[in-house]
Structure formats: C-alpha cells, structure tokens
Image (cartoon, rainbow, N blue to C red; front, side):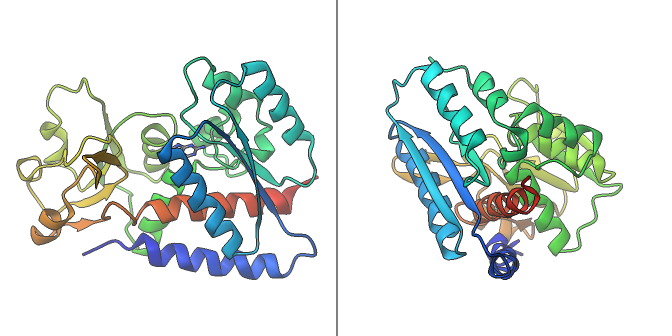
Length: 276
Ligand code: GUN
C-alpha cells in the first residue's frame, strides 16, 4: 500500500486555511536563500506556492552566495525584530564560508519554524511540546497517526543521522515508545538491523539503498531519501519493487515532501498565533 502523504497534506492545509480565515491579519513566512542552487530554488518554490495557496504571505530574502557571515547575521537580527514576519527559515545547505550552526543559533527560537535551533531540538529530546518540531520528522509522525500505526513496542531502524531528519526522527520514535536503531554510513552491515525491523525510515540520499535481501518480512518503509542521478530523481527505496513485494511505502518523489511543507506552514501559523 502507498502511504499517501499528499492526501494528508491536503487535510492539514484545509485545517490551516480554516484557522487563517478566522484571523484579522495573515501570517507571513520568511525565507533566506543564498545563491541559486536548483535544488534550493525548487524547495523554496514549493514553500512559496503552498503558502500562497492557503493565503499565507511569503517573503524571500535572496542573497548572493558570497554574502559575508556578518551581513547574514545582521539580516537575521532584522527578521527576529520584524513583527510582520511570523516565522522564517534559512534554506540549507549554506556555502562553506558560513558557519551553519552559528546562523541557526541566531534565529529567534520562537520564529524558528524549521525547528532547527538547539532550543527546539532540545525540546524534542525532553519531549516538551512547546517547541517547534523539525518538519520532515513531524510529517512522518503525522503519516503514522493518519494510518493508526502505533509505534509503541515496534522495532524501528533509522538510516541517516542528520540534525534535521535522522536524529530528531529517532528521538520522536523513542518518545512514542519504539525500540530504535540509528544507523549511519559506518554501520558495518545495515541488514542486521533492517531485516528484523517493523518500520524502516531511510534518510540517506543513497539511491535504492534498500534492496530485497535487506528485508525479511512485511515492513513499513518511509523514504525520506532524495537524490538526482542523470536528471532522474531517486529515493532510498525502489517503490515499484517494494509495493510488488507487499510492503507499505511512501514513494519518492512527492509523498513525504508535501508533508514537510505542510508541517512548515503549520508551524508558521502556530508561531503567528503565539506571537507576543
Ligand atoms: N534543506 C533541505 N531540507 C531543508 C529543510 O527542511 N529546511 C531548510 N531550511 N533547508 C533544507
């Protein structure tokens, strides 16, 4: 079965639109983009498109790739102070001459709708619901919720340990009572863990990493991987094979991605509703 993030995202948008229609002022999502990487432009385009569909304002601050760190930090301070901006994101990755962690720490945690600031990441760790959840892991949790997939007592294998996907994903699964294995590119043989898992969440960007011998039973496969080879988009899982083998799967492209954007806009509305 396909786990259909697209339909769930539509339900989230319907809820957000209804809440926005009750407001006298519209929320506004800000975005900072450096340079013109086609992938970042595509992500930003999606965020703008869906924000506009639900009557949320969107403001892009687009800088050349060689902007200095100080100038970027000073723009971040402006966005922190700007009362018309409900929340904002800094599109990653940033160029090498910029210290990404320094930039993320400069974002006001109350406007950090990506959920990347250490304060928000820490709240995931201690299970404090007052923070913003990182959007992709939050979207995956919504998919589980929608399909009544309880994580309590499940064996979950997470592939990839990034701060924005794999690590918070592992923590959310732990919070939900799962037994979690977190693998990285140094794990000697991921099959040892994947074969016994009830659920695999893969966020590596290695095309079709999950092959038939890595699965011994019917498994729920959540694919957060994204890679482009010779102009073709790949997930970490070959969807057609996975479906024909009877697994439940989120295909790439297009099934988890919409949930990430929906959760970002949901966080932005929450930031707007809580603004001081
Ligand atoms: N780059 C890849 N994914 C993301 C995301 O979810 N947020 C931001 N800010 N940058 C990204």
